Length: 189
Image 1: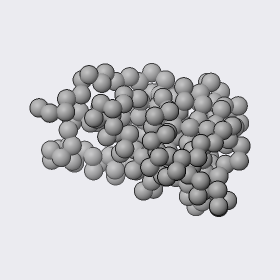
Image 2: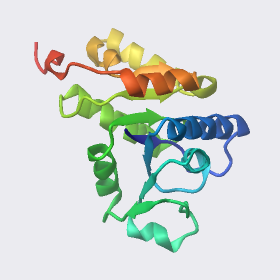
Image 3: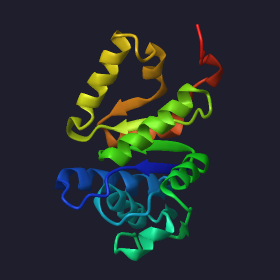
Image 4: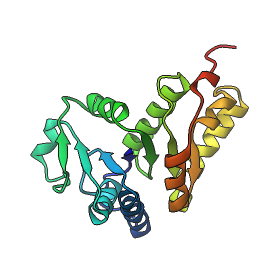
């Protein structure tokens, strides 16, 4: 499978986040999976890529050309795709991945998660989405989603479209086995 990992590219992330994401990448690679990611060498993007490198997995980086100007790209990618914009970058990763793992991150990571979740809710894709909730990072976001479901702003069915775990092995199990019957999705009641 080609696994898309979304996550922070920040340089001041706690060691625990880095270590767990790197271990996840290594284990996925050793199971024969490939990585598709935003191409960054820092943060959890870099951690996932280093893990895949350790595990001998194939790595595809995806970043707009303007990223070449800085020293931010992971230099051990097996291939690199250079879309024109950030929007094209995201679309390429969405279209060419078999599953999505969301690791802790900032605004871009939240946007990526909500984009793939929205596409799944609209029956435009049915790929597994798993939130790797290291140290409860996503707890507050999940509380907001639950509140919005309770208040009627988000359909209850939306909570079935993604899984959440803090276990590396469970993340792997979910991406390998999770399936969702896209025909169950109802746009309108």
